[in-house]
Image (tube, rainbow, N blue to C red; front, side):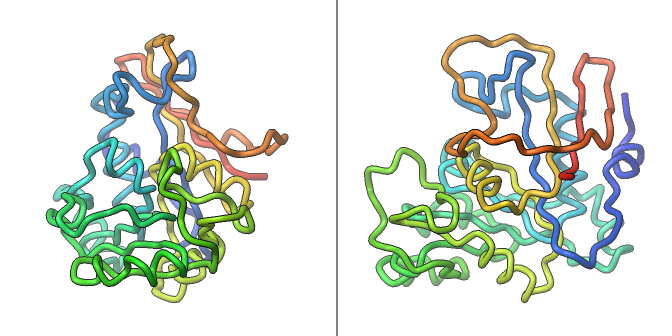
Length: 255
């Protein structure tokens, strides 16, 4: 099994100066992104350790509001075992958490706020911030990114379309500029698939880390990318790690 130190070496960042968006997903060998409705059910011990390592390297962890609800996010942060690494590299003990929500269908009592280890940021549209931002202001920094029409309550997932994509649109490049202004250059996105699709459409994904679980799931589970137009987006294989349980950990870099 790869050690924590080996995973840090395998996923080391070349620099922390420029802004970098790194995605992290797990999927079955037949491409299912969930099992029983949750992505976490597909993972194993090394996958969980890798998630902690990637969080330790990040300045900010980004997740769509739909994934927050589906996966029960709460208390997201670096593991105690990684605090020494972050301090050695001049980072705060915990990465920031940013929740992307076009419609702002979140409540101040949600676990993602109530159990937060660091005050979260909520990224939304200018319109949604005006309508619901004050409700979340006591528990999070609400960051408007993109003027758009009123958010649609019927949207199937509370995740943004790409910049310029219409009603309820979050401007993702503007979001990254907001992060950079706070000194957050290393961005780890943990999904969900619609947010991944929106980031691809916006052309801002630098790296994709994919765990392939040794399972064939079938069923109706979706892929790790949803909502993006079909296009030949080229990435190069930058690394491969395997473990004794049959998992493969692939690292792709944009070319």
